[in-house]
Image (cartoon, rainbow, N blue to C red; front, top):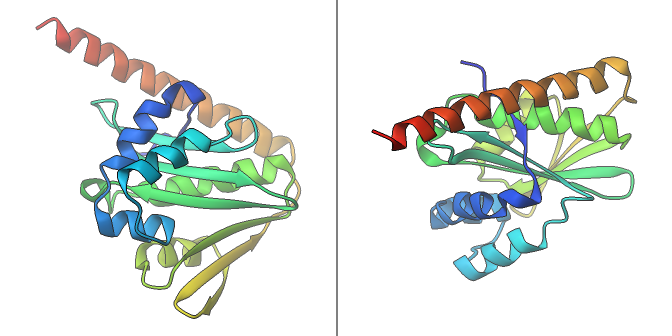
Length: 183
């Protein structure tokens, strides 16, 4: 099944917070590069600038976020962080999130997509290699860079289509959840 990636809004901060809080201690360390407690994670979510950045998610049938990507815009590049819940790994969610973030970064007109992670984060290293990113490892940390071509009509249309399909899928899941509550 294809993972439909939906851009999240600031109204979904509580769901985003629940996703990050459900990550185990090691997953938090791998995602953020340092151990983070609940308070620090809540602060991170509160500081996300939805006007400047983009946050994408994959929702399960229970409407919980199975995977999340935060794409932060900077001068000339965009930085990406990805997390997927332990029970949802191996289903292509991380790769789908990376591809959607790649598309958005390209449509922003930035010239490069950047990921920073611990070298031991094998899943992110695999995703970076699959995406064709240039990888530089130093002192236990890895930077992965991908040069991006300029956007075109196809990339803009592709992003609009993906968002509409994901919104439709999410609406169906919401309807099933609503109907299930009446039982």
